[in-house]
Length: 420
Image (cartoon, rainbow, N blue to C red; front, side, top):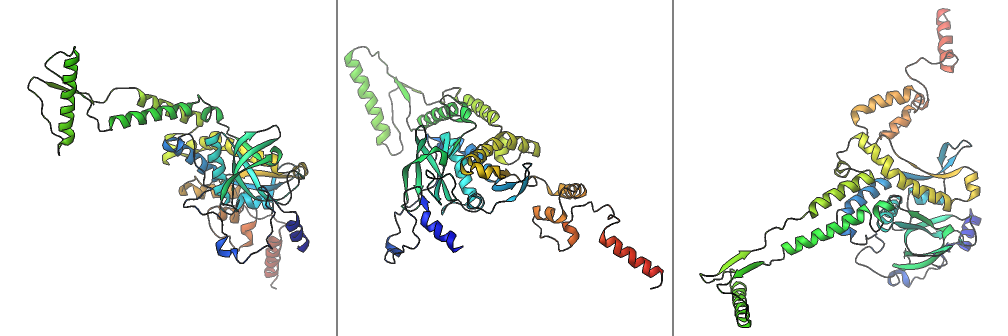
């Protein structure tokens, strides 16, 4: 154990070029050398291109929340590719407990999904590792963060990542083999320049402009004077009349003015009919259908079939893109040949109503799919101390004749019959 700790201190590597030295503790910097301060959280993801001002934010947030609700684990598989158990590794600690000093594992996955949908492509950067990824393919990952890809090179990418040691977002050059580069599976729908989502965003911006103009406080009226305005003198006279009426309205406490009996005012600030709202509604419904979501999913009234379709068509492609890239970049060929993998697991009982729990429990235990204690754990109950609760067998059938308990009972009955 001492050798492993000493080796980690000797070879520890940081993506920002800082050599990790836990033994270097300066007591004078305990209170004064804490770094740059901010009134808001600097590492928090912020949407770009005006997405934060539209209904698109609600769609992004819903999808990212549901993506982060799925468990992602570093697991061990058998020779047939079947799940055996979790790996006790630093990578699994990042995926299940904490990804860095600021984010839990769930917050990190939500950050990845949200940034991926907003930017089209996002980078998962291993910040603290056991060795330099450029020198060795085999290393342990202690912390990781979401990065914004700024420049693309043949074998490298320039990424903007938050440095928790300085409190600033910094640009670093990383090899592609050491960075998880995840592209949005719905890039053609969300991020292309003329995609459905981008068209919807432009229409929403136009609708906002129209609303601002209609509520700007202008009167938008025309004064009809009792004479024709063709000469310059008449134009000057009309201009003076307009300024006079404007001064009456602005200079009055209650905005009251007067006009001549021969003059007439036509009000123009009536709502102008346009098809912007209909286009917004059409593009919204088209976006929902292309993403595999509905309004009932956003407001929480979707039934089980709708949610199953949503998880299969929307959440599963995003999770597969994340796990496949992590498996490809963060697990060596040797680790993959040994049966290590990164998988995601969705709890199938989250959407099951209480009225159906008993029937499902009976079917799962009767068909020897789950033990009683395993099912008790899924519904939040403590395991039973009864050893039979850990047996994978049908409780509705009698025990096999060769079991120890049956032999004991039979021997006891024989003794009773013999009068012993």
